[in-house]
Length: 197
Image (cartoon, rainbow, N blue to C red; front, side):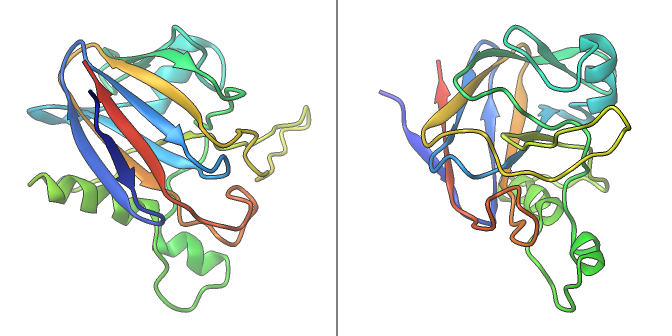
């Protein structure tokens, strides 16, 4: 029997996923973006690289069967199942306190950058950098003229995806605290995950 773990609203969580195991990430309420990173266990300078993913996939967001490639172009995890409409942004940087300053905040705002570092710290790890995230369930439409927009998620309550580890990784998730733009329908909620053998 698997255990369902919570990624609290506006917070981050990390978990070990061993080679051959999978992580199931559940958009419990359907509206929540979950920023995601995978780091190679024991070698945290190797991690999911969005530039490398896009160059290999030749599309902007992953499709079932696609691998998440590292900054060293190794397949770290493979998307094996996705019940959502499949919109998972690879263009936008994880939000940080400075981003909210540009959006008008004058005090500290919870953010995915800090959530990633807090999730790793719970497992006893630190890194001096913040890689680009894959922003699960985040809907960033693009137009022919190159314009982008921040639109509400297309997923429904209970939609999920499953990522299988091709090597031992540390998976890090952040329930994005963005409550100014529309990506979370201006409400932030918890999400859930399971480690599957």
